Length: 297
Image 1 (cartoon, rainbow, N blue to C red):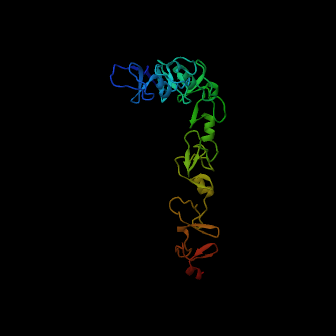
Image 2 (image 1 turned 90 degrees about the vertical axis):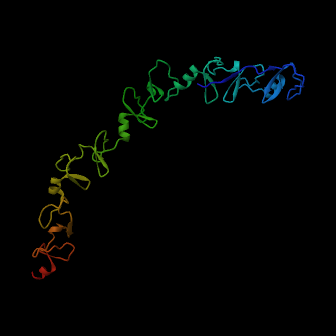
Image 3 (image 1 turned 180 degrees about the horizontal axis):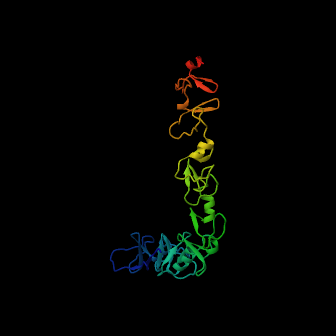
């Protein structure tokens, strides 16, 4: 609540004076007469009412020297004009509120006008009616609806996104991360792999369906595999040792030639076992030879 300053009549009766004592405006002698002191100037009541009096914000008439004046934030009223704009209750000695549109209201009308207005339909929420209060705001029960599906929340759980309210299913559908595998929302937990979210139950070996969380695995063409299945079903076979080229541990480097692959340590001359990685070589009957041994064949 805000408050006002309340002043009574501003007229004074002069004492007996021998010097001349005149009104600042009309120069009328003020000895033995009522006058008002305004900005350090002495003014007769007639000139004050005509030239100096504040204008009442309600009735638009001057507030004379003999009237009681109330003021609030550079606005002025006659005492009888200072009333609630809604119920017209006199507010000279009552708490009140000043609205943004300039209207003055008693505490009861101000509360009804502002505090109990539904945020959905902007109509008054009547006392005793079913309503929802959230973050110091109030809604009719039927006006507190999901921003997405427009259905009343009522007893359901809900989540807020900025100023918008969502029921749990709509929030999940709109904002939850989608699993990279099944494309359905991830509501709790989950696994992140290569910056992509997965359900734990979706993060399984493509071949044997074994869960891969917490185990060694690898990926190939957007699919994930356990180590055993990758070796058996996916990995290329080394032309030298005939074992899968997995990239796990020893044998990470690979040599590829005309559709065939070798572990780098298996890419050696068939006759002298010289390593031929990054060197000239000769293939004869699908076997690899260094140039010197090839000449002796």
